[in-house]
Image (cartoon, rainbow, N blue to C red; front, side, top):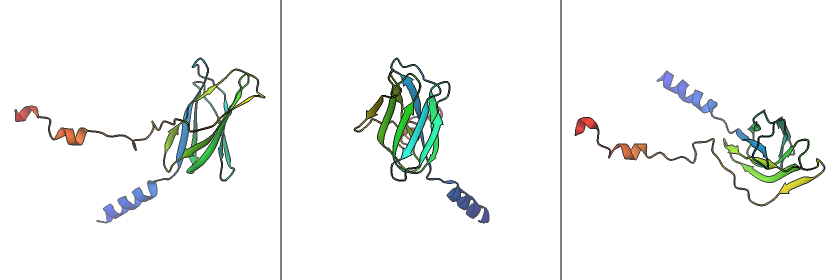
Length: 143
């Protein structure tokens, strides 16, 4: 009984509400853009987290508190890209892929409106028919 209590307490403290923003930054031809500066601004608190894309153009920002964010990316030879209104939920891993356009650094492309965001890193939106389907599938030894 004591083991079970300690196990449940451990699971309680192991859970987190921190979220992650991840994605790939590419150019207009679909090529990865390494070394891109990524700024993630919490619109409510004004706190900014910064990172850079790796050689494959991937970035990951964690931990983030739930809220609405503005994501800005910039790289030499490309127009700066800003996307506001990015909403991150509790314990969410949100993938936000971004495409840079060739141009001057002084130019900024601001994306407004509802963006199609994909939550591909979490099992929250996943359904497996294994449990219900396993009851109706015949087992070889039952035949």
